[in-house]
Length: 190
Image (tube, rainbow, N blue to C red):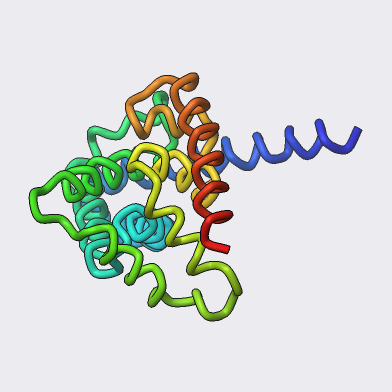
């Protein structure tokens, strides 16, 4: 009986945060810098982590995250709270920016990405993190994105589908293939 109660409490909290963020976005539309600073403080770290996991480059990830926050300031009137949460909208923008970078001619090679993952902060603190990141970068972009959004960013499959402009069924399929491929990559690394 505790689970349904916890779920209700979580939904109430999510609704409260959503209303609060919708109000902040409305204030950003009016040029309120404090509201903007509050939203940046809440969302910049998660967007940057997402971009770093997708791109494998800390500096590009910082650029993407800053670009997303600039979009929040300049185009906050385009956010529709009835369609998605603010974090989903921001991650969708980040996703599009990352895909644009990945598809640019001359983007880093896989070896560059693996080297960046091996040298990334915190990889020496936990054994196996470098190998997980390396295996993650060997996945196709769509599988890597689905995994990162689901397991690192804690989005639901529905939200991942919104971010990736896909169906929930396609996301579930991507996750299934990604987990299998990740397992194969990790087994061959041992």
